[in-house]
Image (tube, rainbow, N blue to C red; front, side, top):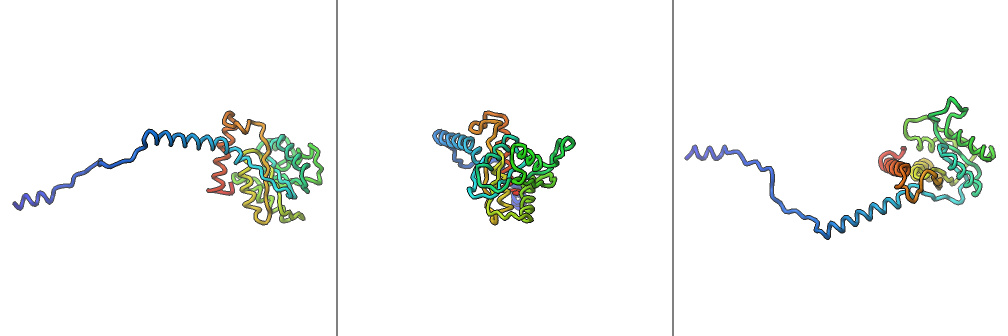
Amino acid sequence: MQKKQNRQRLKLPKIRLIKRQEMWLLTVQGWIIAIALMVALINFTITHIHPFLAVTSPIKSAELLVVEGWLPDYALQQALAEFKSGNYRQIITTGGTLEQGTYLTVYNSFADVAAATLKRLGLAPDKLVAVPAPYVIKDRSYTSAAEFSRWLSKSNLQPKSINLFSWDAHTRRSWLLFKKVLAPQIHVGVIAAKTQDYDPKKWWRYSQGVRTVIDEAIAYIYAQFFNWKA
């Protein structure tokens, strides 16, 4: 009797790899509603993401027009038209070091190239200032904003508001970074140049549009929530 009790005490517990439990599942009607909601969400995102990224929200009383120097020539033409239609005192071009072609030109930065282009388009030299940014591996937009802020603090200009002129889907991210650097002392409006690379209303039909919108959406999320210096 004692031996039997000892064997019962030494008996190993049973190992159970699965168990039975109750589980809730969607019905056919539930799946239909869920799929319809997903389709509606995807459609809403596709049709609204480009206007969100390529934001235009200018300040009518802005005194300076800050133009990102890496913009294509057609966008610089749009920037010049904006300058002429507003009550701006000057255009300020920003941008970092050129990565290609420096052996073929006297210009070393996107800010200088944009300024020279605007002069060629007819802008008076006294209405234009180039503010180059130093070379950096990352945080280029933030660096341009910070360099502009440093230049502004040393200049005789004390604007209460500026308008930032950027390009298409990149505009939302640049606006975020310039506001981070300049606000609340300086109010920052923004204007997005209209792209000629694809139809913004049907961007998903163009390879360039897909690459641009997806890249800029990811970059904006990264700048907003993980590293706003991007």
